[in-house]
Length: 327
Ligand SMILES: Cc1ncc(C[n+]2csc(CCOP(=O)(O)OP(=O)(O)O)c2C)c(N)n1
Ligand SMILES: [Mg+2]
Image (cartoon, rainbow, N blue to C red):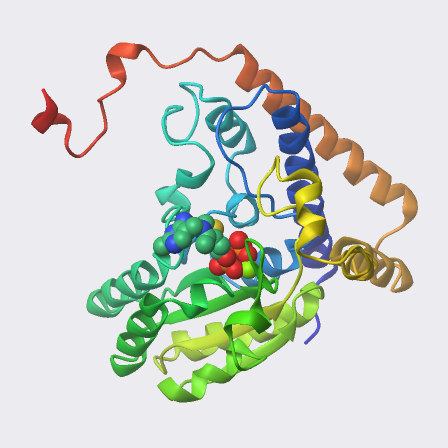
């Protein structure tokens, strides 16, 4: 599959935007500036960008607790994301949701989700709605290797396959569910092999290679748009940081330093960068320009968040479904 130069550069830029956003979030959290819990996507950028770059704007994604990368890849406003992380009124959830509740329905982001595995049936539900409306959008559920061992994985995929719903199930297999290695709780090594239980196609790809992910996702999108139903895409990936910001050195108690170092050598951004340089699509000076531009965007997002007001305490119960019940 040959991708246009602009498309490749856009994918590169999006991966850099995710990386830099996450690095800033880590820095601000460690300084004690950001409240709440954050799970960084550093190391996994190729999965979100590879899959989402195969979608249209009117397609849907359902995200996870590790969701900043999905939102940025789908085109979220990083100013509103940063404001949400600061707990400010100008954030996506008016500062009351935080990292694990960012959503932007206008561009098809059905929401991050702090409940592991919960977005699998949500994406299937969105796909059912697509089917009932008779349109050709697709829905994507991102979830981890840990989520793939929950009952909801079976329920969501089973019904989607029985009803041939236009949904892609993307397993971001970073090998760990918090501190538990996949091999301790799963007898098979490829989560993608489970596709055969549901009679759907599988793709098992190198999740550090954005082009490989994009290629698999493009096939899955075509499959869904043609009305053939769901697919399961397993992306082998790795998180370069702890499970959550603040885990610190504890992470080395459950995963060997050498393993981390080996995976870092396979950085998905460096990989794409060198491939694009080799093909004369990217130059070092253009890469520097992209880096500077994104540094500027992040600085602007932080400024926007810092200058924004906190929500008024009077608004604490606004926008909640049970608001009436409490008053
Ligand atoms: C239903 C549910 N069970 C447990 C948790 C606690 N929890 C939060 S993240 C996580 C690990 C998830 O691992 P995985 O699905 O592999 O995603 P990753 O963090 O590796 O991206 C767990 C167990 C939760 N939030 N929801
Ligand atoms: Mg995991």
